[in-house]
Image (cartoon, rainbow, N blue to C red; front, side, top):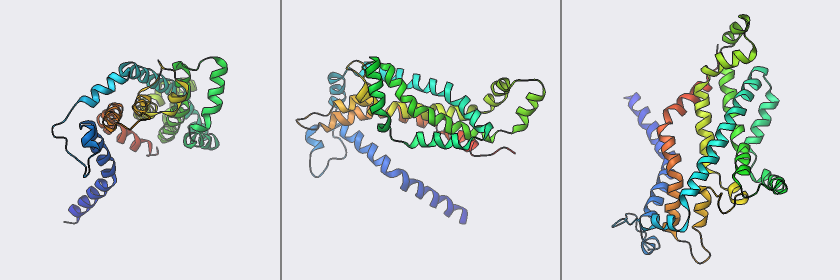
Length: 272
């Protein structure tokens, strides 16, 4: 009986924590499938009757949505790939050298608002003549993705048993070979988590693309902003655009939730 009450209490606590996000998503779904008359009605109309798809059609007619999707894919995959190449070895070095100050700098870089970097980076890219291309967007996204990868990988590499790498070094391996053939395969759950988190944060980033991108290099979050007009806020197309941007990340999170939980749990367990 006590066990059942504990499970019930845990389920209620989880439901209480996630219910705001679920309600927001359901309301966004409702807005996207209603006419503008129903969206502004009072009392509110929660269930579309019947559902309409004109809002999604308007999103594609008012934006080059496929081009924006391709831009987001290029930027997110590039920023994530570069972050893994840079962040995984950096996390290994910081963990093995026990460089706590470097780890704190990474944490500070992670929690510092992106706007703090935006003005100097904008002036730099303007001087280099790169504004309006995808290159500065990928580089600025590294400000977000690299600290995530480094911080996640530090926990993983600190949790690996040191005896395995020491045995490889005794057998004549170099530190690079020990990293590549011993530490890296064992840290694959951490790399999976780092890839997923980096991709999600890069995909959702709005401010860098809004400032640095040109008309042809905007990403999907900017497409949502394009649905806003000075005359009025069209809630239906706005919700439809937001839903289309959110859907890939939501599906990725749902599909990879086991890997994320397993990876984060493994990263929190120290090796003996």
